[in-house]
Image (cartoon, rainbow, N blue to C red):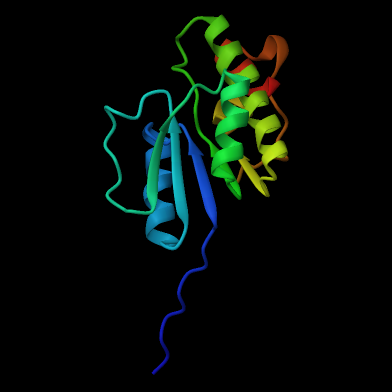
Length: 162
């Protein structure tokens, strides 16, 4: 009788925005599907969040708009993989979207490169490719971006700019 193979470890995984809706689901899936992986969760405030019960998950408060803090954190955690799901609510001020979605993401990318991260996954929004004339069927990175005057949402504009 053959035994099921143990799923491979993803190594050290950092889920940025891991206390949010998407991020927390990703944390849960990584723990379920790759239980040998060490998962670090980064969010603005992790104290009020529901923490995953796995001993392989650690929680870290941090602000991605603070470049020095991100460089220090990633140097300390040394993740193999970064999954970036952090983003402010779409109806906040444009300056917040610029600070988080554009500059914060750039800080994370720079810190990840410096720390030797092997894979960086950036979650965006379907609205970067969604237009009123097409359904999203089998959409992926090859679809054209909806930008400029064709893009009515500033939030989405900042998701494209990173």
